Image (cartoon, rainbow, N blue to C red; front, side, top):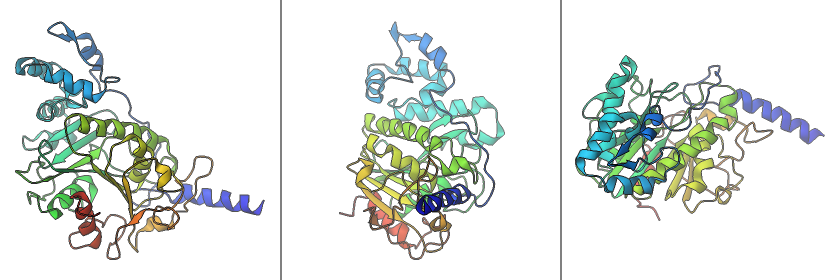
Amino acid sequence: MRRFGRTLVTAALAVTLVGGTAGWASGDSQEAVTGPPPGTAAWRADTVSGRALPDPASAAPRAVAAFFAGLDDTARRQLLRSHPLVVGNLEGAPLPLRYEANRIAVAATGEARYASLAAPDRQILAFDPRGRGQVAEVFGDLEHAEHVSVIVPGSDNDAASYDAPRGPYTGPAGMARALREATGTGSGTGTGTGTGTGTGGATAVVAWIGYTTPVGIGLDAADGRLARAGAARLARFTAGLDAVGAPDPVLFCHSYGSVVCGLAARHTDAADLVAFGSPGMRADTAAALGTGARIWAARGPSDWIADVPNVEFAGIGHGADPLSAAFGARRVPAADVQGHTGYFMPGTQSLAAFAAIAEGAVR
């Protein structure tokens, strides 16, 4: 009974403490955005040369890739003009077509909060205006990259705040730029809104806010509801990368994003999975994640996530500490990391290690 009481107290602490990148604020319950994007009904009703279009909700990304491979440029552009929001989010569709489709879709919203995403030098791989908005941006040449990494962020990230001013090496875009530059293939732009393009280079990095993240501190950050929805979207996203010939990605999973990655792990073809600033991955051990990917973990000495109890009780909390010896992850050095978001600061041990993992240089 005493042990049960301690578990209840720990679970209560988990509700209080588990949070994301924005700090100590009360959380608002979020409704997960799932399913195909707006415009899907019109897409399903359309045809091209008498052929039905692949269903965005059910068609495998490889089937989508095969469908587009059988179209000429005229037919592709017809679909682009008629259904930009669907084409821009269709896993398996050609990458340049998706970039162009999303420029059109972003501009079509007419919303100032998204306007910067429509700049001609941005490579927006996904855009969904529903809710707080979802977005994915490519840094580098994803079509020809030898290595691909995906940044999966935690709480308080969405399309509306994606280009908001913040530290240059924090936030999904800042992390992506920093990682690409650390691999030696970055374009060196590194500005607040920056560009996603880059000429040459063996490594491409995707900043992926493809799920509804928790806001602040609250039950959303302490339970797995949003993470489960995000995991399904992340698995489909990685299948889309595979369908267009991209190499198996490295997933860099921050804070609540590591919960998403933990639940998605067995359904992706990731080569490596790096959890940093993690409250847990909803698994007792790295082996229990059910993936052939190498599992890595990092936590800085001043990261407040260390104060979060590593339990899971009645759906609250995210389980074992990925940094613990019992979990079995490989450790990433992070002794010089400051706070919860300092892992990509230039000169840190963690960024150097991350770059080596991203380039496949660690065996």
